[in-house]
Length: 194
Image 1 (cartoon, helix red, strand yellow):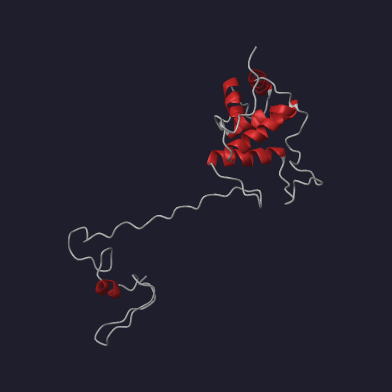
Image 2 (cartoon, helix red, strand yellow; image 1 turned 135 degrees about the horizontal axis):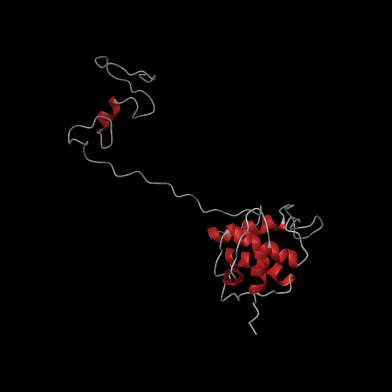
């Protein structure tokens, strides 16, 4: 007799976005009566939709153990099969209007909620408790390349990378505003030359 799947322990799957995703998937798995991965995979294969999805029993097992996030079509197919087995509709709201758990009036459906958790698990980000959306890490800003010491041909580099302050002052586009120059030098216009 095959071993029945159980929710991974905290030692096996530490708290975080992957555990939240697997925990939600286990909610439907338990409500469906803990069907075997073979039964779930067979039910997915029987589902006929616009783009039929094939999911192996090993993929089902790995999803429920938190060993993979797989792809969204595979997760959606498994989720919908588990919902159907548990007499739930994936289009139902995750939180009802009278739920004490829905302080933010979360209107996401069962499908939308599991997809958000799946995205969090894929990205490795923690969900934001205040608005129900993931907190994304800040986008790293690129640092400018080091300034070269000369131009391509080894000659002068007026106003470009590595230009001296005197060269940069003669380039009206190197600074934001035109520079005042002595009466012997011609001034620059703010208008581009074209």
